Amino acid sequence: MDATSDLSTLVERCRAGDALAWEAFVRQVQGRLFALAYSYTGHREDARDLAQEIFVRLYEARGQWPSGGEFLPWLFRVARNRSVDYLRRRSVRRPAVTVDEAEIVELPDPAPGAEAQAIAADRRGLLHTALRGLSAINREIVVLRDVHGLDVKQVASILGIPLGTVKSRASRARVELAERVLALSRGRGDA
Image 1 (cartoon, rainbow, N blue to C red):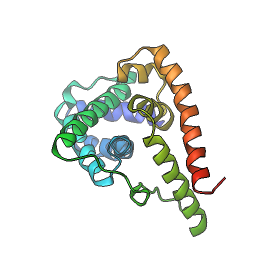
Image 2: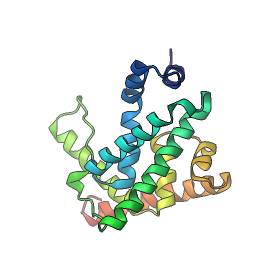
Image 3: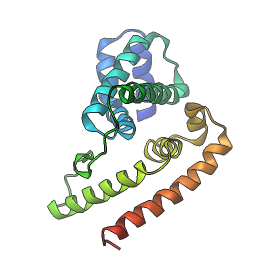
Image 4: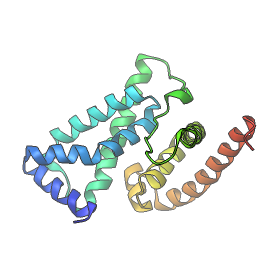
């Protein structure tokens, strides 16, 4: 059974109120939702809070979940909308936080040694810093398209913008991201 059909089965079981299916569903999508939340908040604790809020919203609406191929785009649309709402509420409560590279999420990699891990963490930090420099819409397109692997139609649907806009912005955003990474790298003396 592949991951897509496994997710479809979990969705149907969750819609029917199966508590064990809900636990399996959370385990299967929590990493993706955390990563999406982190791409909006830039802070691990805020991303955890936001991901939890997204899961609460999903649980409350589980009887109305779409089925089949419509579910994943719907899931990302819900997560995006909650993320935007969260940022609006947060901006009213406190000023924006500058993300220190040390706070960037580090994904464990068991194969490489300590030096390779340090280099990889430095590169991820550089990439996250460059990603933060993109406009909000370009950052969303890059994250949804290139990080989460959604197709352009799904991204257009989630963001509520025309398909052609997604295609052209995705291309320009990738070029801009690459330029920012190179500039940051040169600024640190890496290049």
